Image (cartoon, rainbow, N blue to C red):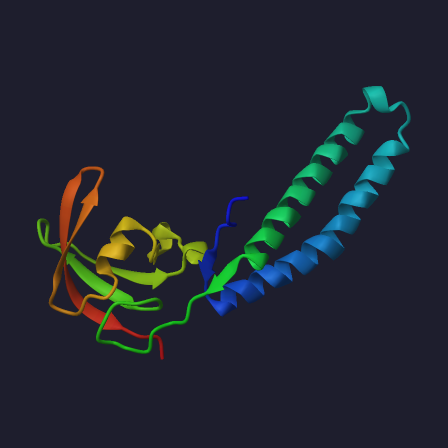
Length: 160
């Protein structure tokens, strides 16, 4: 049997998932059950679109519950590094694109917390891996779909 995937996340993200699971299994499940009960009361189930919708909604809910449980059961808590010398989980890294001179800031996070549009990149992403363990002043290279990119690490900050 295949080894289950491990999902890297902070203890804060794990707590959020646990709270979400409680909500899904209590409040949300009752809402869906009530919707299903109401749809059944409309009569003939073979021609009842409300019933079909309610069953679909129930299936989606159970799928979401199973996915959330899987994330919780296979969570791997990553501890944030306290070092401001090297890039690690929790680092806020300011980099400069060597070619364009453009500066950007990224927070390095576990894979379950990544949101590139919000400047949060996973330590598992190609760019996150290329930064990991490096220090201010170093230039890192990483292979993007458009070719090799080079970034200079300008600053590494820690959350206070």
